[in-house]
Length: 169
Image 1 (cartoon, one colour):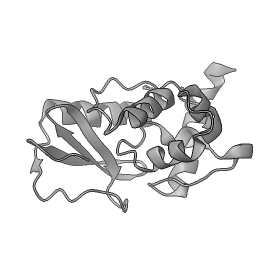
Image 2: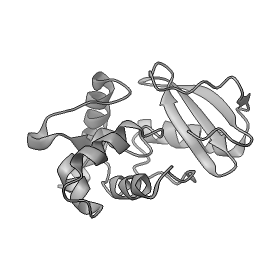
Image 3: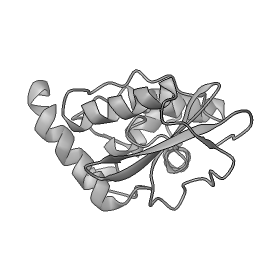
Image 4: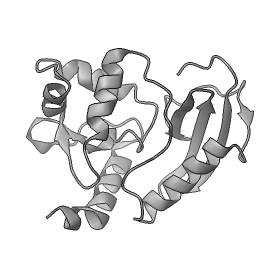
């Protein structure tokens, strides 16, 4: 995560644990569970719970967990590379209650042999849930890694199945 410029953050509780939202001038930089290993050092970030973007992040997360929001409207800071941005855009097209595979996502972003590169890009996703890497499964439908813990990936998929899958069928 690029911490250049003014960075603000806040933490809030969700049904799956405490989350930390981080914003900069370009938009939302990160959304993490506070026990994730890849949570950045926020020593230089200013705690600003009332910052409009952080208020919006908290509200949209509350709506998501209540089953009232399937699509996020948060302005996101650009991904660090053009490839990561394509992966992010492709992943955001996978709706709540749906899943894809690394291979299918690679084909969707015009990188048909790049499933490993897609997996690496997803492993560096700083925007858990908003950029829904929990919706990506390994070949054959197996649940693979997740930076927030496999138990959370299971819970997020079950949550979405309860709230949005019936709308898709």
